[in-house]
Amino acid sequence: MIKTLQLPSRGISRRIVLLRSAGCAAGAAALLVPLKRAAAKMSQQSVAYQDSPKGDQQCSNCSLFQAPTNTCTIVDGNISPTGWCKYWAKKAG
Ligand code: SF4
Image (cartoon, rainbow, N blue to C red; front, side, top):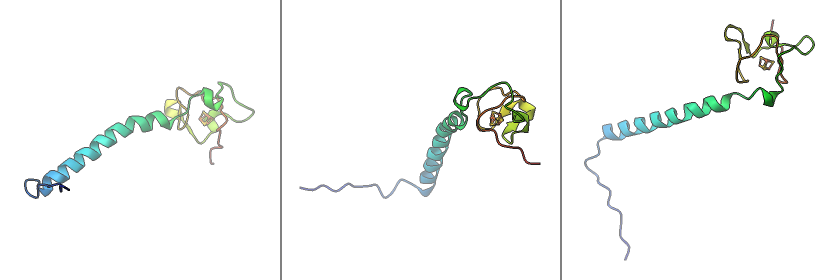
C-alpha cells in the first residue's frame, strides 16, 4: 500500500515562508563570510613573499598593495612597502 504525504495547505502563510527564507539566506551568508575571508588571501610563504624588493619591483609599486594599512589585496599579513612576491603586478600610472 502506498501512502501519500499530506502537506498542510493551511497554517503557513506567505509571510512565514518569506521570513523563513530570509532567515536561511541570512544564516548562510553569515556562515559564508568567514570562509570567504579565510580563503581570500594567501599566506606569505605560499607566494614567496620577501621583505626586500626584486630589482625595481616592490610592493609600493604593485597594484595590489594597500598603502595606508600596509596590506595586500591577495596576501595575508603585514606587507612591507619594500617587499615583493611572485604575484607582483605593475601599478598603473
Ligand atoms: S608584490 Fe605581492 S605582496 Fe606585494 S603588494 Fe604585490 S601582490 Fe601583494
